[in-house]
Length: 247
Image (cartoon, rainbow, N blue to C red):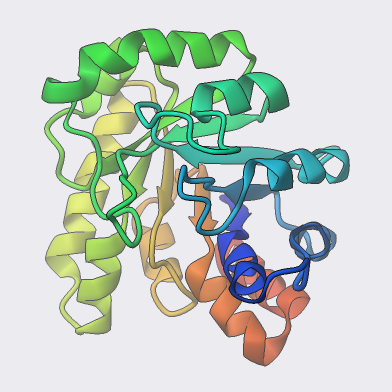
């Protein structure tokens, strides 16, 4: 079955908007784990707009048997109490590290890597991250011509950026965007890579993607899941996503 990793950044956004510790990131993660998710995803950024480095350390005691996926830009420098992605991974030893080419000016991740530009810069960083015992995944655009290069650089997986697919699905014309995701997944599969997917996936569009890519290893879902949980409850929403993935 395709694994569900719940991105809990939005819990931290709510907390940070008020100060203090409510809602509590660790309590939210515990509820998601109890509901059956296979992983917890966090994406700490240097500007600390949501998840912070200290949150990651607080999560570690909760994660026995649950994967931790840390996302981030390996090129972003340390800033304030953010130690930099590689230093954080070295200290926390997550199951997976997903490298994403985002910057502080981006509201959210909105494109994958261009490996013709960044590939050789990534190669030694991928090797270093793997030396800390974690699986490395690269955030890649659907339709990217660089998928085979991911394997050459040593990473084990890609995460398909599904934002364009989700947007097209909402507009009722998703065939081309879905086809691009399928081609990218097949290219990755042929290169011996695992396939993750994430960004703007929700209960409406997830099943169509899963049916088109039956060998999908993992989906990382945060924004929609947390939004839906405001109405249905966190545990019930996690279980609804798990049922979609089982179906």
